[in-house]
Image 1: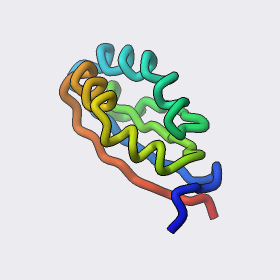
Image 2: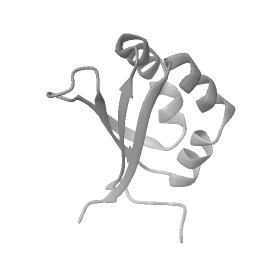
Image 3: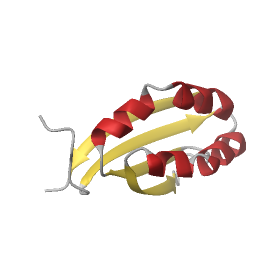
Length: 95
């Protein structure tokens, strides 16, 4: 399997942080890091039924760099800085 994917490949993450404002600040501050590590674009949604719970769609241009970021100390530090949260991740390809 190739580590390069088309821009129609998407990673979706649902995040429910204990402190939504803290999580949101960290998320916004980390945008340049994601852009340097395989994320071509992203869209953030807040759950209408569960305020403070978010769904993020990441368009991935380089899956290998994105996976590397997810396993890095940079990501671990960011996750710690954003505070406790439940996270679910899904991968999809537009048909």
